[in-house]
Length: 135
Image 1: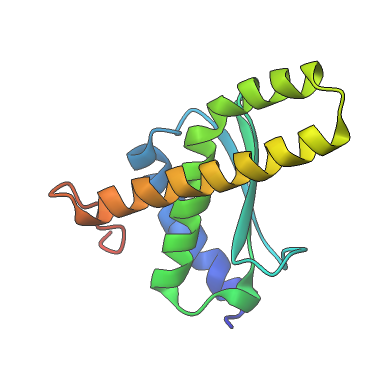
Image 2: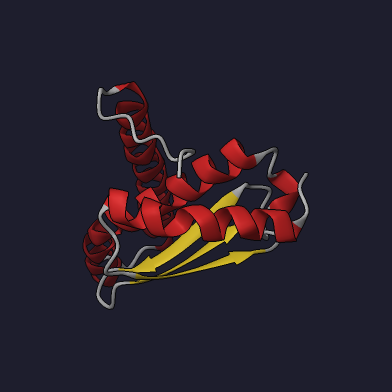
């Protein structure tokens, strides 16, 4: 667990560089440092139609600076892949069954988390490893 003001300082230091490196510098990304309603390190809500995203970083689950930066990168990668949210919204308008919508959302969450994880792994293992810690 870290103090919220320490997490905020880390976020402020790394967010602009991460946004540029990930390719979301044109997005309006609002980042708050506060408890997440679920037991997660961070969460993201993005609207690709308006290029607006809200990211929460939970200081109670932050271990150290590296952990905060990795969590921030993870949530920003969700912004990157959020363009597929347009497809999900269209499907929701076409499906009437609550059970079907729940199944779609479960598969959607699984697939999105896996895509973000795979991008993180590729970044970490590639020769183009983005060293976010050096500024």
